[in-house]
Amino acid sequence: MSDDRVDFASMLASRLCHDLLSPVGAFANGLELLADEKDPEMRARCIELLEQSARTSANKLKFFRLAFGSAGGFGELVPADEAKSAIQGIIGDRAITLNWMIGAEPLPKPAVKIILNLSLLLVDALVRGGRLDIGCEKQGEAVEIALHVEAERIFLDADVERILAEGEGATAMTSRTAPAVLVQAVARQSDGTVMLARETPTSLLVGAVLRGRG
Image 1 (tube, rainbow, N blue to C red):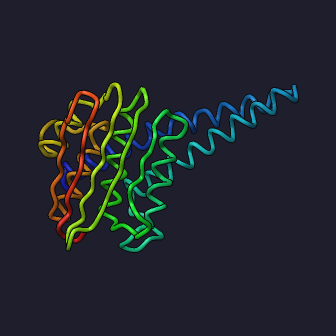
Image 2 (cartoon, rainbow, N blue to C red):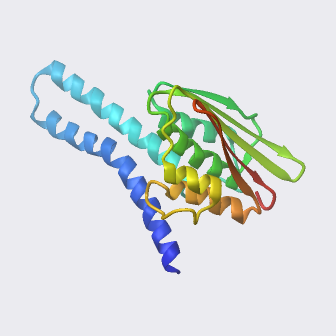
């Protein structure tokens, strides 16, 4: 295995651990508080927080299983509702409106990986909330994917934007940019291309066209 592939795997693992650290840590802290707490109302509050942390952790694991992993349990096609549910899980209670414009037909795994990883990057960019539109359709043998965000401010990391617009070698890879590198790698494996367009200061379009095995 080349050094680049080892670094890539390490960066994805770092990103996964970073995103799971907060809810898992909160769960552990909640257990410690519950063990020492005697007041019934406070114990009920601790249990509520534990349930919230467990739910957040489960949602993130479900998301990363599809976005980074091999999506075991599915064949070459993934139910569209699974992808939608995974994205809703990482949005959680943020002030983000998801406009899902994909039908009930199962989606090819490469398309799902691209949709989920782009969603992860765009949800991170909507720190003050906004709208996320997601579409995907077949055009002959090709699969076309489009994600569009609108918000008062879009805080997409500059290195992430460069990688999506110019390719995976546009800047050094970090745990922050690893999902963008994965998008480019999956697109390349499917004989595809990735595009990014800053339509206005409050609007951003990212998409991909997969022409091969996708």
